[in-house]
Structures are given as structure tokens and as C-alpha cells.
Amino acid sequence: MKHAFACTLLLCLAFTGTAPAQHAPTPIGKSAAKGEKTMNKDEIDVQGVIEKMTTAFQNAEIDKVMGTYGPGAVVLFQPGQPVSDPEQLRQMFSGMAAAKPTFTYSGHEVTVSGDTAVHIAPWDMKAQTPDGKEIRQSGLSIAVLRRQPDGAWKMVIDNPHGARLLPGNK
Image (cartoon, rainbow, N blue to C red; front, side):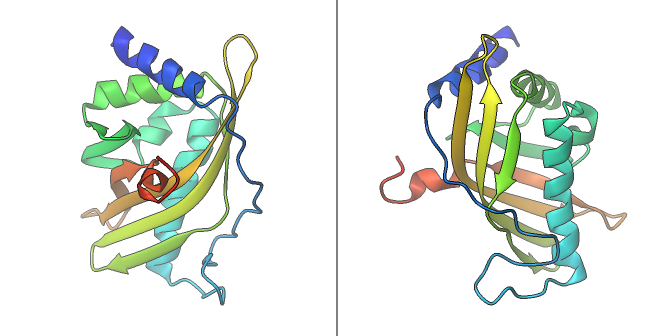
């Protein structure tokens, strides 16, 4: 577990100095797509899960963060390295929350098909290393959510590194 925290801190440090673009956040119920399509209830609920997780993460409320993930969820804290063990997820989120991150999204695209949804959003993050150095990162979040038996949406796959697959972002 100590190794996981060290990897998280190194990951944060590795992105130091990467300046993100500045974007205005997209309000709930509006899509980032041209034409500002009005979202339906399922799409709003899915986006709400993402926003709930983001707010909880920024406030270091790790129990609330974990509550946005379904059983067996996978998070890619590093590209190509999925983590699914709940204790390791908790430790990784706790370690990253120590950097006091703040996130902004430049838009949200939500697509729902039955009990499955995908959320795509470009994001910017600012944080601080333990010695006070500013960290800036940006990326493209791709999350898959599943409707639970109680009707709530939970993330089952969370990949904040989707932009690495685009040309020029390796």
C-alpha cells in the first residue's frame, strides 16, 4: 500500500508544470455539444454522480468518493494500470486528495443506453505538492456508469486519461 501512495505522489509530480487551458464549467442539465442540447433525467443523474464524486474528492471526503463507484469498479490512476481493489482505491484517492486538487470541466457529454451510460468530459486540475509547488494537469475523462438495482447510477470504469489516445497527447 505504501507503494501505491508513492506512485500516486510521483504521478502528481510528473505532471508539474503542464499548464491546462482555462474553461468555463458547463451547468448541470446542459451538454457541452454545440447547440447546448437539454439533457434528460438519466443524463442529468449521470452527470450529477460525476459532480458529486468531484466535489467529495476536492473536499477529501473519501467515503463519499467511494460511494460513487459500483461493486468491482475499475479506476485508471495511471494509463493502462487499472485498480479495482477497494482498499487500494481508497488509499489512492486519499493520497491524491492530500494534494488539495480543484477540478474544472469544460463540458460534459453523457450518453445513456438502458442501464449503461458513458460520461466524457475534458478536465483541468490544480493541486499542490507537500512542499507547496503547484501541480497542473488536464485530460479527458471517460467514465462508464451502470444503473444499480435501487435506480442510482454508479461508476464502474473511470479513466481520466482518455486524451492520451489522441494524436499529439502521448
